[in-house]
Length: 455
Length: 185
Image (tube, rainbow over all chains, first blue to last red; front, side, top):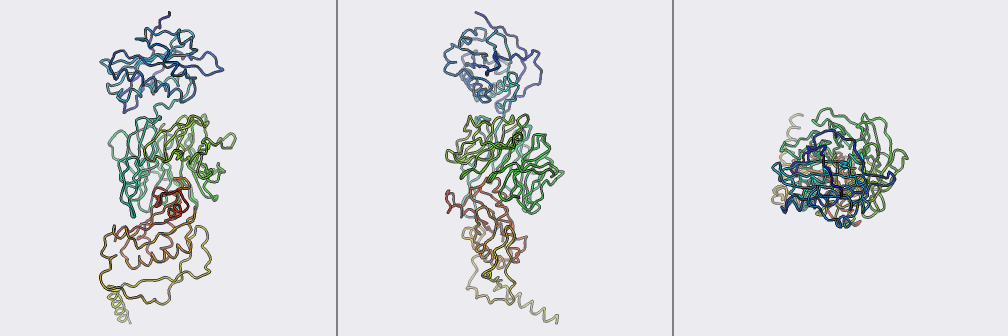
């Protein structure tokens, strides 16, 4: 029997309270990353057994299970690994400590790597230690220690799992995982109504959740409609369209502080602003406005200065989104008859139509190396999500024609899309992989639309 | 001559107090060509001679004394309906707007908000633009009938507030509308 040896390379990663994403101190690991895979021809086989609670506290026992479960889902999401199924994981007895863990059984099960994690309460708070062991030689590919406040496992320790998942994806697959990202969307789930001119009308507010739908929380509290949220690249602000003043305008709201909201586009009854989109560097917003008579696309600095008009056409120009370089916009225009997706340089030159659908709207543009544009394309009685490739200049369909599927928003690594669909009744938020697999329902309560994925 | 004019103006003003004149645009001529796509339909020809207005019923005008909410609940303004994916004001819509303009001329202090709505087909984002175009088309037609622009506000709600939530052609046709809401009086 070969006992594992521990030498923590990086041990100061900090996971804070569940409400705040853990802030990871930037540091270069001293070792050369060892990948667990042995055969480049197939995905590495990864085992994530239950974590080991180092005391018998009920919340620790629960966290030990939840962290492993959530980490399993996070790792399965990006499909970089073959995940040893959970029923097989359960056939391996759980050791009482990391020191007692052995790799023999995992070798028999064909695992290339196994995650051995412990959870304990210390004077520092909750400490989670994780080791990714390379089964073929017993070497430690990755070793991390995460510390959080005593409150950091109130949600079962999901934040720890997400931090571990992103770390493993970075080190083992050289991809930016999305486990710590958030979704924002609009919802009428709280059933609030406001007085309308004829009858009562549903109020919609902005909500947010983890990327996997956990921790759904309300962000805005208005007797109005707040729609189309967009995360600032630093994750600190949501920009959205609100009718709270009686006319639509763009509101920037901090999600962590009580700082009063701002309205950089300075709307009025004669100057209405919709559908904000952040530039990749977070310094500017693109949006649509009727300030010059009909809907056009504009860019403004986030502090409200330096307004620039991008489009100038009697047709409607709507729904802007930024290219990953920040040098172009994709937007929707009906200048050719029905609405289609176009791209244009931010100075208004270089117009290029990219969709050839019955109708198309709500472009979202993924980052390099994928660099694709997804949009909603008319299909039968509703819409389907399609992805346009610049290399082929063709689009492929991602969703399956069930119900309507609208408002796509790429994950920051471009590998998944959030959208809303009425396939199960009322509009709900879903995520789907860019190859059309792995459909996951995020929301279940009320009507939920206009998803946006944080960076 | 100036004296005469003054007297006439005074008489008119005194008269207006008890019996406001109502401008009645002529109905559109049969055989008028339909308006070109997207453009504002031609307003009716100016009325050469004032048409005599029937006497007002005796007693207080309920629209003058009611509060705004009550008026909106039983609104004197009729909505304008639109064809699928269109913001063109057709003949029926023109007649509705002429009647709405008459009300606005009768109550010159009223300010209204024209809400632009769409049916659920089409994306939510693009429908915000379509609703804006519908409300703007109704506003432009009212301006052409002599209603000052500063009494006409527009707001597009896209498909956020359907009047009929059913997923039927009948429901959709009710939801493609410019809806008139009294905002201040």
